[in-house]
Figure 1 (tube, one colour):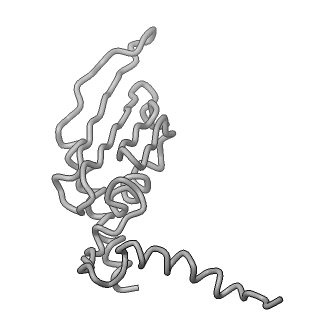
Figure 2 (spheres, rainbow, N blue to C red; figure 1 turned 120 degrees about the vertical axis):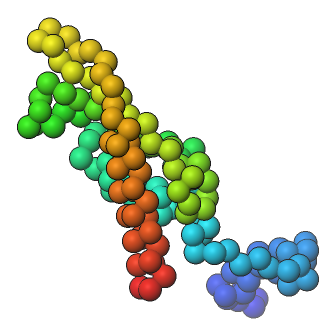
Figure 3 (tube, one colour; figure 1 turned 180 degrees about the horizontal axis):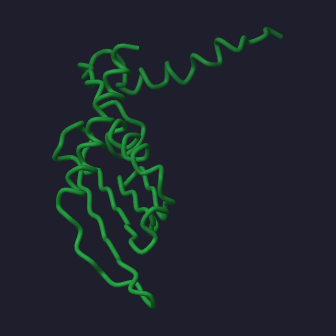
Length: 144
């Protein structure tokens, strides 16, 4: 009885796909590095957001929907103030408008936490940090 090699068995699925129209008869579209992803959103923005928010505990991090939500975080230097951040990555492209950051802030009055306004500059600065980090990750991936 002839022995079938492992290489032959590995080639069978590829041949079956080619026979079903998956061969070279269709034009192949090459993706830009910023679009290559195995998650539902831009991988550079996703990684950069996680890196940026690593100081706070996460409540949710869903790569398929692109949503990251932190738990309340109080800086040890300011224990009567706490923040919660939500980052939404909206696209597979590395663009500024593919990122949305929202923050909530509370102040402790001695007996309870009360809602307080978040300065727009705080949210804008978080967006800038995430975008800068994402561009750095992309640059390192292209060069490295």
